[in-house]
Image (cartoon, rainbow, N blue to C red):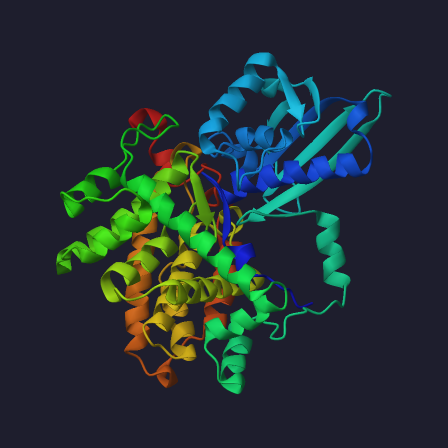
Length: 475
C-alpha cells in the first residue's frame, strides 16, 4: 500500500519535551474524547483511567507523559495552548482532584491513582496507552492507542486494516522510497522540492501551503529566539543550566532588536568569523532543545527530541551562506526536509522507542543535510546522497536519556546532528553522484535492521547506557 505523508505530517507544531511521549499521548487523549463524544457517552462518565505501557511508562515521568494526558483530556490543543497556562491547568487538576473533560463535563480525577505506569510492553508497539471510561451503568469503554513517533498516533486495528487495503496514494507523485523520488525528479525535470510541492497541491491550495510553511518556520524562529534569550535551570531535577543564553550573548555582543525577525537580520549583519560558525549553529540548536526541555512550543522535526537540527541548519543557511535568501528558500528547505523524513518513516522508523536515537537525531540530520544540499545547488542525486551520508554516521546511536528527561545527552546531540548535516551536504556537493556506493534506500533498510537488532535497554527506556551509568544524584 502506498502511504501519503505530507510535509505537515512530518513538521508539526506542538509542546515539548517529546513528540512520542508528550505530543503523541496528548493527541491520543484528544482522539479518545472524540470517540466518547461519537458514542454519546460524555453524560454517563463517572471516572477516567489511563494505563501507560512500555517506554511511555518507563520514561513517562521525565517526558511529562502524565501531564500531556491530563492536558489532552482537558480539551487543550498542543498547537495553540499558551504554554504559560500549562502549569496552572495542571495544578488545578491536582489540587481539585477533578478534570474538566473536554471542557464539557467535570469528573473526579486523582492523577496519582488514575494514571498508571505499567512497565510491561504491549506487543504492537513500545509506546502503548489505554484509556478506560467508567460509566454510570457499571459498564466501561476502553480504547488503546500507540504513539509511533513524531506525534503520529495509531490504533492497532487500523494499522492491520491498512496493510490489507489496496487504497492508492492520491498524490500525483506517490513516493515510497528514495529511488522513486529520484526517478520523478529525472522524468519530470524537477527539483525534489518541486515534486513535493506538486504533491502538497493535491491536498491544499497554494496559499494554504505557503502560509503553513511560513507558520512552521516562524515557530522555529521564535523558538530559537526564546531559547537564546532565556537563562536559568531546566525543570526535571537534573539541574541542567541553559547554555544558549550565554553562548548567544558572547556571540552577538551589544545589538539592538525587539523581535525574532529583527534578531535574524541583526545576526545577518554580524561579522561571523570562521571559528564562530560552529558556535552559532550549536547555539541555535541548543536554544531550540532547551525550550523543548522546558515544555515550550517547538516544531517536531521529525520529533521533539531532535527539533533543533533542522531550524539550526536552515538558520545557518540564512545567516552564513545566503543573506539574500527569503521565503522561497525557507519553503524549499522545509519541503525537502519533510519529504526525506517521510521516506525514513515509511522505510524504517522515527521512534526512538523502536529504533534508538538514530531514528531521531539521525533522521533529522539526514533531512537537514538533504534540504541544505538542494539550497546550495545540489542535484537530486546529490540531495539524496547528503541524506545518506548524514544517516550513515548516526547508525546504531542509542537512546538512553538520564532520568528519562530529554536533556542529557539529547540537547547536545542536536548540535552534533546539525554540524554533521552541514558536513554531509558539503561532502555530497563535492562528490560525483556516479561514484556513490550506498544508496539512501540501503542505509534506511540498514537502519531498520539495526533498530531491530538493538537491545531494548537502549530504546528510550532509561534502563541502559548513560541512563544507568549516571544517575540523578550524580547530576
